[in-house]
Length: 192
Image (cartoon, rainbow, N blue to C red):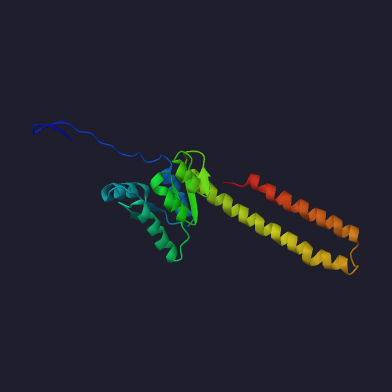
């Protein structure tokens, strides 16, 4: 408030605007089995109001950058895998400490440098897409390892003892490699 003598002559208010897709993203993360939490340097009343609007149960307010790191370390000490999403200089140490750090490209350079993943749009939906893509990638890796092991454990010994013609074994090896590449390319069609 601005005063002139004892009279109020003006009122100014400043507030961060919640991203339009934040509530939907939080809901999707919950549906996927994750527990979204909020770490903020804002005062407790502001943090509580934002957490309530977004449906976030657990939040930490009035947290300094080094305390954000300590909160993450505490969660990790309890056996939790922690993903930190942030965009500011104050978030950079916590992004680095997290098991997976996600930085928004619209944020500070140091936050971007600290992140394992950088989302190049301002959309928080990218967090959900990144998680889905990482799960699909891991699934493809496991499938590819299975087929490679299947070939190496079955076809090579059979060819080595002379039961399988070496030319057939070579063709099978080439087909195995083609299968691995084709299977990996199916990630382009993953529904994120």
